[in-house]
Amino acid sequence: MRNRVIENDLFYFDFDDFSHVMRHTVSLKCGDISGDVLNNAVQRAALRYPYFCIRILRHGESYEIIHNPDPIPVRPGTAPILLGGDEADGHLIAVSYVNNKIIFDISHNLTDSKGFLPWIQTVIYLYLTDALGIHLSSAGIRLPGEDFLPGEAEDPYEHMELDDVDPVPLPKDPECVFVPDMRYASGTERSDYVFTVSVDDLMRLAGSQDGSPASVLAYFSKEMIRELFPDSRGTPISCSMPYSFRPIACGENNYHPQTVLLNIIYDDRYDSMPMDRQLTCTRGTVIARSDPDSVRYRLSRYAGFVNSLDDLPTIAERRSRYHERLESIVSETFAVSYIGRTNWGSIEAYMDGIMIESAAISAPIMFLMVPVGDKFHATMMLNQTSDVYVETLVRILNDHGISSEYLYTCKQELCKVHMP
Image 1 (cartoon, rainbow, N blue to C red):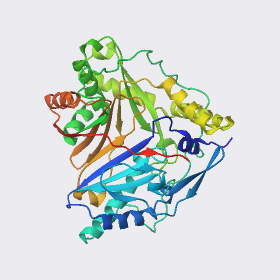
Image 2 (image 1 turned 120 degrees about the vertical axis):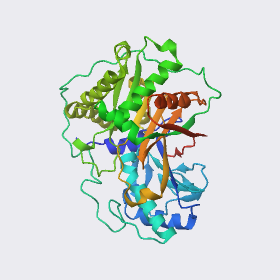
Image 3 (image 1 turned 90 degrees about the vertical axis):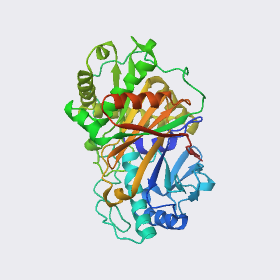
Image 4 (image 1 turned 60 degrees about the vertical axis):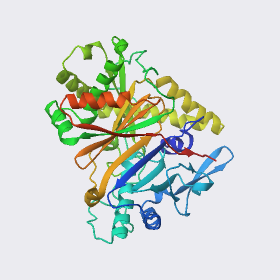
């Protein structure tokens, strides 16, 4: 059977009021953004990334993907637009700008951050060279006219050997995990809190404990929860980490969304250990749960589920089945997403920072972190309005010798997606 995972995720992995989208906001050091120059850069970059330039058509109870020749929308302001709708000319990608910031919106069903950042790099490179009239090295930047890199546009499920035998059964997650309530909320609006963390300080601790940035942030976030909610003692805390399976599929150049969730369960056993042991155990759990054979087995089961949707007669039923599956498997206190070290190349010197936002399915707290220069730029996304969480986390990090600074907060503004 041909795997339909990529197509069916794109078509049906949105439901009710949930649109699976991402927003990356890049701040530059070169003054206010010129809309005309940015528009030119975006349309030129589109020639290098035709797989982002699509339109979805509906034929009865089925969908078709076609190339979208219309310009990608480039607009002033921060207000999100309806991706896939008329104001986006059917595109699932859009760009906007305000002051010194360029804002990139895209359907998360089309790509993930690893697949999206090369597009962002290309747009910024073309914008800087035109706006400033300078020459920058294009090393590591994908430019219009260049061929695809190996594996860039391949279907990862078509080029990976799936396995229907579980070689290393994972321990069963607890039925009940701690979920923060609204005791600190000043409002019920989903809000984003942006802070920075020193790369050198965090990596020094991670390196000494054979850890990773995601493991360290997960540990301190758990400590934040335990401090703010002393009544959580005795109840497991669940942290989910998106893990890219590109190494066992089509490689790092591939643009398709490719993640599985790894769960870290912090229980009484963890809490009884000193910090260094907890960090080592967290990293060990990540390594064990990302075992390639185990990941292939999980992907095989997921592919079987997605392919089975073709037997359902209507689009509404397929979308509903996705929703039912997620409701049955998701249980988390918070999530930590770290996409790894990004080689920004020559444009990094002109970048003042990056903020990443994403639609969260269930996580009441979600962290998105990416390094630029000497700092990790992190977004804490909350299902409420409260600066108590980020202030507590930043204080805990600083108390442990990891320089951290809370920058600002903002209302979460994310696009919706229209499916015909």
